[in-house]
Amino acid sequence: MLRTLALILAGGDSPALSILTAERTEAAVPFGGKFKIIDFTLSNCINSGIHNVGVLTQYRPRSLHAHLGVGRPWDLDRAQGGLRLLHPSPTPDGGGWQRGTADAVRYNRDFVEEQVADAVLLLAGDHIYKMDYTPLLQFHEEHHADVTMAVRSVSPHDVHRYGIVSVGSDGLIDRFVEKPRRSNSSLASMGIYVFRKQYLLDLLTNSNDADFGRHILPRIIGHARAYAYNFQGYWADVGTLQAFYEANMALLAETPALDLYDAEWTIHTTSADRPGVQIGSSARIENSLLSDGCQVYGNVVRSILSPGVYVSPGATVRDSVIFGDAWIGPDAVVDRCIVDEDVRVGVGALVGDGTDNTPNHEAPERLNTGLTLVGLQAQIPNGTCIGRNVIVRPRTAESAFAAGKVVASGSTV
Image (cartoon, rainbow, N blue to C red):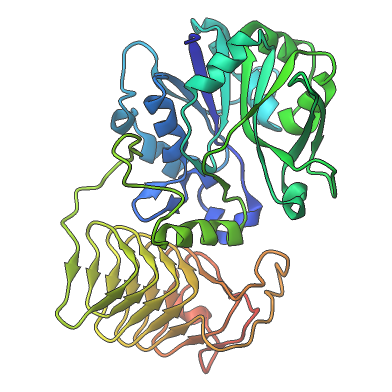
């Protein structure tokens, strides 16, 4: 296999995930109970035999840095190669803040030059998938490509979310359009690129373009040996609230498309020292995923609980994703919600209540399917009733709720 340097782009602010990324980068958002989103890309690298990995960060990186540490869970705590965290810092000429994906790599050009590598594998840190990169790298080498782009078919209704490519009979890409309103092609870039190392360095030196998808790739198509590699496996872009919620819920299918129990392709993560799950004698659990340290004495139905979640007696969690160490009080009901870490849902509170599906007034295009969000460390008072498509901002105190403790659907607190 080509000597490969993997660069994981994990610095975006991801506004489409609303308050889930208010205080963390998307790569650090919990997924599937015990994992973070970046765990999938990192695990793909290790399972593919790639042990030279740089993670490029920028936006609110503290929780991501804490999660990655020195890379031990992924066997990347090495003297040679291993995991390097690459974060922007001020430069003598006043630069340092990165304007896009290409600018992020350009800022670390000296690091790329120093690496003993034939190819640079650029990866997004915000996708959920399992992929062996070895066939991709072999394809790139066999075709003597300057750049190879991993692609897959998407619904024609979703082309506006992706970079869309057209491929000629020889396998060369003849057109690339970033997020078109409509397109005759439905072949989407997965945000996975293999560059010949020197070709990439020359591109970054000879232009000041900020982004690969918006600037560099459309410009070089037709001039470079740019090939498309068709990937057939599971891949999910969870960059919107609905996509994130649906990808989590899909794990509860009888035979999920994403098999987290595949012993031949382990998804590694940092695991806290927590005891096993405790289930009370009166608890009822149906078609759910529970993580270490959870204590359940109420009802959990079709939901995913991250480590340390506490569900009190008489409480019900239904069709929801609950992040770590949330506390659901006695007789509370949480229905079709995403609840962030360290949230307290008070006694008898109803979160995601009623049939009024009014879109959120501040973000109608993002929150309009009945999903309610509760931000990091928010405190919901006892007896509060919160409707659908509601946003409760991070660290919201009990005093922020109006008299009567009723929050109408579509509101933001």
